[in-house]
Image (cartoon, rainbow, N blue to C red; front, side):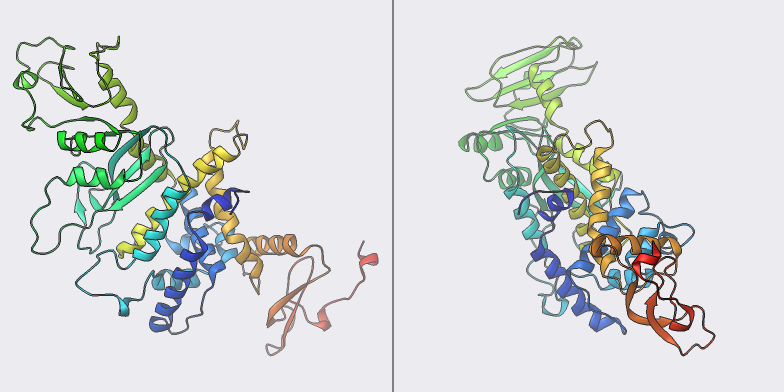
Length: 455
């Protein structure tokens, strides 16, 4: 698939296979639980996703659905795409697997979304080649519902949610690989060297890169393992590591902005005192000399670490500014919303590299990209609508979309019969509408005119 517009870059991440899985599983759940369920197709799934994206770009994710779809307080494109009742039905039935065939209480904890998630993670790595600097860190997908592996992280803004390990390219913050932490199995002991395992799994397939991470991941065994893979490590290290020389741990009597270096064959340690009583320890297999910068006499190791440590944090900040998350009690849906947010950011990175001149002078290019993706996703479904919505503004959106798709015509033929808006006889239903005002009219209340006279 070639990149031709913003929608095509997003389609590289939300693939046709993923959409068909969602459509089939949602239809299966809808038939079981909703009495008047109407099967949806791939276009309607994309339209639903498009509305989620538009609610995020309009900063309306905390707004109620009835307000979003209201004729007075909402936006016309929501009512032009589907009714609020249909949106609610799809939300209730939205699924990624068959619950009845899923293994219960054993096996894979990500089974409810595993197929879609694995396809997406594979696409992330296929579509981008990271630069020489990469960053590994954790993300927290906000969620307060019932989940066996929900985490409490008091230092994060949301505090409760699903923990996701991520590897990002430092230059662009492109999410190259992600992994959901599902906790330990019942009866198992706490995992040792978890940080080392996570970094080695996320960097699998890379070579010649420098990995930047914080003190949760950094250790001497990890540095040695990365060196065997032809990769370097730069990161802060905890003071309880047995390999650290005691002289690096002492701060008493040391001058502010002073540094102490320690060297081995392939490792460099530095202890830096940014203020009285504070000690910062870093381990590097990239640096080989005790270089000091002019900025508060900081070691070069620290300046390089500060330059690269924010790759995942930048992704969180960017994705959170126009997030499509909505309140939900089901963690697979919360994880899917996170998938959409990361896909939109990654797609923007690819589109910007493909067409660097696209809205170059504007400072809100990413917002324009997300809005255009959302509008392109709902457009095919708006064109398929068989009747006009009651709201005049939403009806104008439908008419203009259908006119642009079908070309100029003298009238609009509706797929379903509706009551003539001028007749008192409620049993009289027709399919013809006026080409100017869009009102439904029967033969007694309409006038036929040729194209020549209409001009």
